[in-house]
Length: 121
Image (cartoon, rainbow, N blue to C red; front, side, top):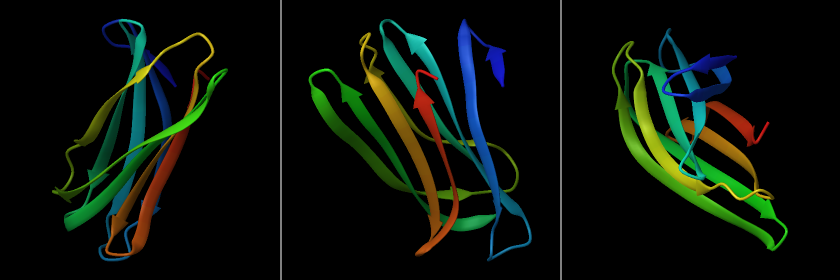
């Protein structure tokens, strides 16, 4: 789904999976928008309550000059029901740059939810 928010905003990919530790679902999604020649990506989660979650955000880049990977990870609590920004990353937006961005959410070693997007679409 495309939306307008301070210019072009692309709401890309939402995946809901049941949280095995509670009856409520956990949702994760990524939003990406161009800004000053770069791509700004925000990773979101909603659901819970879950006392401690681990997230992993990776951006795999391919370009004419080769490939690279950027990774971020952290711990976060989810209270019911408000969205939480897990991470924000800024990526180069060169004409030949292509990204595969993936967000994974874990409770312990259990994968609760994941989603990916390709930039540009």
